[in-house]
Image (tube, rainbow over the protein chains, first blue to last red):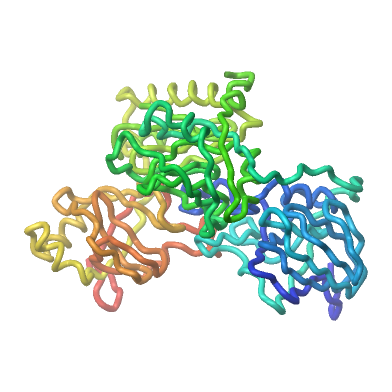
Length: 301
Length: 217
């Protein structure tokens, strides 16, 4: 508890960079009210940042898009930076990614521009403690729910969402590859396409376009053609869903996807590979590969 | 009923029509299968999202088949059970599209309003925006497609119809439905729990209110 006149631990946003938001694991279980899950688009990196600083997995962190964030810490604390690798400077000294680092009161952290990937996560011991909306501190950019995107001068209080003192010194992390291969499972409307459509999708190379965002990764490449051209009554979609709009150019839904969609979903990117999709930059190429084993390997199948 | 794959953490159940969706959704909602984290009804489908650590697609498929078989006529439909009181929505029927609708349907604006008031309305599902409810029960003579050119801004509280549905715009947004009136009711409020007033399965009754918002009896 904070006594009268005593200021709680907080961080001040000096420069937010191109786009930065507070994100946690989102708002599951509200889709039937028209509210999408939202949360970190690279959930793997968010979880890792929280683990490195000894937070509970659901603690909120800062999702930094294309780096450029500068923050100042009011009190001593601990941070870990994960996701897209950026040069980091803390109080004038270079520090590393994917490791817990102690912070002194008044220290300035500068997050540079990532050489690879899109989203970098700044985890802070205790978690970002802005008011939760519907049980989550995530910014849903499509619906406009949750804390506003960060602006210069914003102050974010820190919370007490710790579990144990951190025990991991450095987390191993997979390198970002130039052309990731995303595992894809059958989607609900695969039968609206030719029988070979999923195999077809996996044989092609797609390029990520500049209008990709937290809603979805929009792709450019060989068009997928529908066999059934009737209008699809709106139906619920999932994160990872590969929707094929009339243009035939696939869209991979990310955390802020609309709850329902009116175009057929051909396949679904495996949840474990969605962070890779979320880290693809415009101009980068990606491929899909079939992942039937992921489901069939389950004991009850 | 068809159970369609939807990646590793969901199934999509498809049925013949909206009524079957409402019936099956009601049954599933009253007895949510273990491991299911969300049930999302839509026009012809229900998405069954699950935690893959707690259950699996084969187990869920079997459960869904069982629930569906149980709903095939042997039990009274969900609407016959004791239902919570209907959500009452006071409407000022002064929408700018009543004239267009009169031309499209061959009815007078007064007939359109009467038929809308007498529908047996129910929230079928939500979508489009947080708290936007697709309300079923529209009189068949009022079914018209969406407007050719959507409006860039429809005010919060606008009551609109399209296809087989009535909707209440939870906040100002673009929209392509025909506006028939407005309500002062706040249908979506983030500070409320639950935030949405109109939840799938809820019965809805539209009542006419005068310009001051008072309900006419």
